[in-house]
Image 1 (cartoon, rainbow, N blue to C red):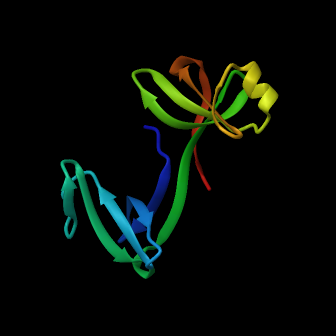
Image 2: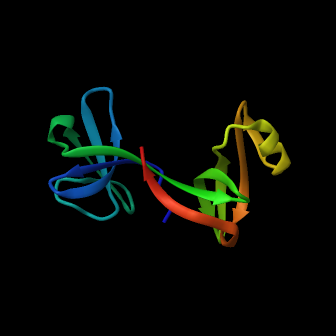
Image 3: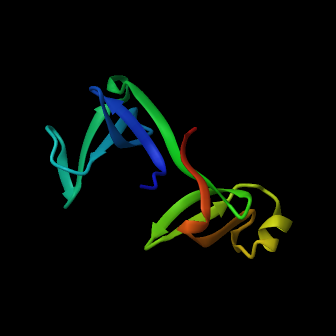
Amino acid sequence: MIRDGYLARWLGREFEASPGADGEIRLYAPEPTDGFEEQRPGRFRRVVPASEVEELRYIRTVCTWRGEPFVVVGEHEGWLRVEYAGGRSPVAERLGLDRIDHGVWQSWAPRNEIVDLQEEFI
């Protein structure tokens, strides 16, 4: 599973999360959970004060492809959408990556060419 986003620990359990500017944390669960309201099928939300959250961290999935560092930003049927994390335009161009924005280079990579796939907390 490719993860990219906030995770919160609340009442000893880990949830996908979204911090708000209002001092509250939105917690998300994939199944019915006490006090969570269904937002859509398979997505339940509960808003709690930030002071109740035991831990809030950001997680992303990183890897190496063709000898260079990437962040995984998506996946589909055996392919990973990867974003170059090396910061060097000549390398991105040599790899044939798509320029998405200034300094942002991405591509679809076959999953079997990916090495060192791991989650990283930042």
